[in-house]
Image 1: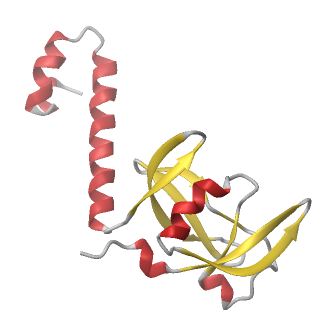
Image 2: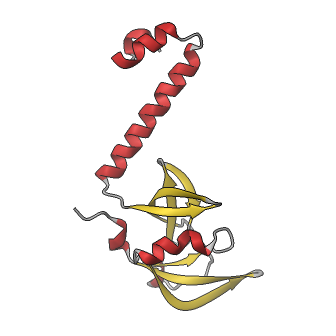
Image 3: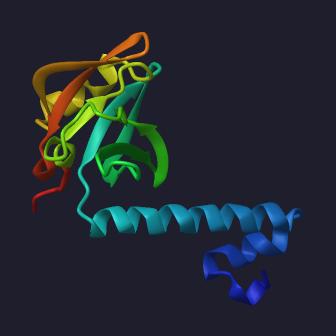
Length: 152
């Protein structure tokens, strides 16, 4: 990257910096974070607390679909990067109609305390049903998709 391509605030740093490659990588990472933040604001994604492994993260939830059966997939993103998958795909666990607004919660890889804020916000609504796969039993939850967008 040439010096003239840099924003004004980084030109002095570029001249003083001994390792120009690292500086350019740093600038690109800042730009990437800024664009991801803008995308989240444009999409009006709600920010949730996500306590995980003793730390508290701010996440956005994005709705995806599994390729093989089209069931709902819920993924957590932190700073625009995939952070955790909230749901798990178990073939035959959900009917075609349920697959549009129900998920099988992945408690095998997540702690219940991590998804507790999603219960408090009304994103996940318990159905009381469970499904077994291997040695694990997973609960089925209804997802209130209207709670994922920020209302302004």
